[in-house]
Length: 129
Image 1 (cartoon, helix red, strand yellow):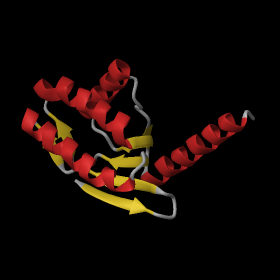
Image 2: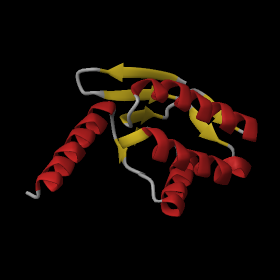
Image 3: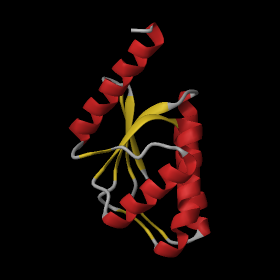
């Protein structure tokens, strides 16, 4: 897993290089998020680029549950970029089952703009505007 902090936009760009096939894979995938994001001491906004990420069908439901834990514990606003059809299905299923984000963007730049817009909306709601 490659994580890169973008200080200009105060967000993380994550690029997983994984084919999740086993429960051990899920545990290690989760651990990588835990180790990286624990350094921030707060939830971080994330763009995740999924060009080299896959989830095997039999393990999909277990991965979806772990994905929801990642979101609840470490992630604020987030968008996915370039997910394949199977990952898209598992993300949407996880989102529906565990009420976590399923937002997608066509590019990293679009994802960053989406996060900025989500922040603006959130700030307006806090101000009651």
